[in-house]
Length: 420
Image (tube, rainbow, N blue to C red):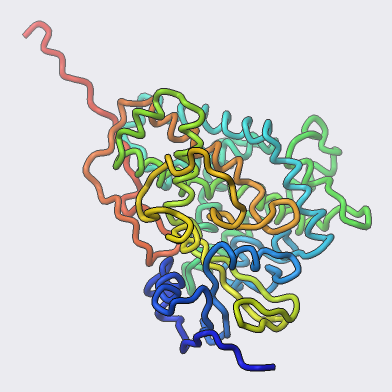
C-alpha cells in the first residue's frame, strides 16, 4: 500500500489538552486540509473535519464506535454492551428501542414535564438565587424520571442528578476526578438494575407503556430479554442525555443575557423563533468537541488509505463552525436557520448521518424541545435577572461551560415607604 499523502504530526496529546475544542480545526485551517494524522496518548489517529468528513465517518460501512472511546470516557458515557458499541443489525434493532420512545408526542411530554418542574423551582418563594448549570440538573432529573415512569422522590432525584452530572462533567477528565465519577456510576448502575428487576418482576404493571418498561422488556434478535446489566446501562442511556441537555440550557440563557432582543422575541411565543434559537444554540456553543470511530474495512478518502482498526476523530465543534458552510460562523444568529434545508452532516452537535441507520443521537428533537422550554420559562420569570458575572466559556475545558455557571438572581421588591 502506498504511504498516505496527508499531513502527519507528532504526538499531539499535550496540544489537544491545551487547546480543547479548537484543536482539530486550527490544524486543518493551518494545513489547508480536512484531515491529518497524529497520535493521542501514543495511539495513531486520523483527525477529520467538515460535512464530507461527517458523511464518510457516519457511513455504517466505514466506521464503528466499538473500541473508539477511551475507557475513561466509555465507562461514564456508554459502558460495554450499550447501543453505541453495537454495529449492523444488532445496532439497528437496539436503536429502534430508543427511537420508539422518542416520538414527537413523547418528546412533548418530556418538555412539558421539565417546563412545569422548572417553573415550580423558580416560583418557590425561597428561590432567591438559581445557578443554572448545576441546579437545573435536579429539575431535568425529576422530569426524566417521571417521563420514564420511575420514582422521582426528592432523595432519588438529588442522588441521581449528582451522579448524572459527574458522568457528563468528568467524561473528559483523567486520573482521580475520573475515577471518582466511575465509582459513583457503579451506584447508579446498581439503582438502574433494581428498576429493571422491579419492572420485569411485575411485568411492568401500570408502567407497561413507559420508556423504562420498554427498556426492561426489550428483547434481542434471539427473543431474549437483555441481560440485566445491559438493560441497566441502556436505561441510563435514556436518562443521562436528558440531564446533559442542561449544558445547552446554560448556553441558551447566556445567549438571552447577551442578546436581550432575542429574549423579547421569544417572549412573544413564536414556535418558529423558539426552533431557530434552539438550533443556533446547538450550533454555536460547545457541547462535545469530537467523536471517535474505528474503521471497519480498508477504504480510501481524500487520498488517505484507512485500514480496518484505524482510529479516526471527527471534529463536531469545528464542523459546526465551518465557514464553508456557515456564514460568519463565530456570530450567534438564529435567523440563519430560517428556511434552512436540514443536512445531516453540516449541523452535528449530537452526531451526524442518518438517525435510523447510523449513530446519530435519536434525542435531537427532545433536546430542541427542552432548550425551547428553558428559554421560555426564563422569559416568563422577569423577576430573575443576571447580575454581573463571568460568562466566559473556556474552549480548553472539556466539556465546556460558562465560568460562573449562569447565576439568576431574584430582584428584591421595592421597600415600602407607606406611613413614613
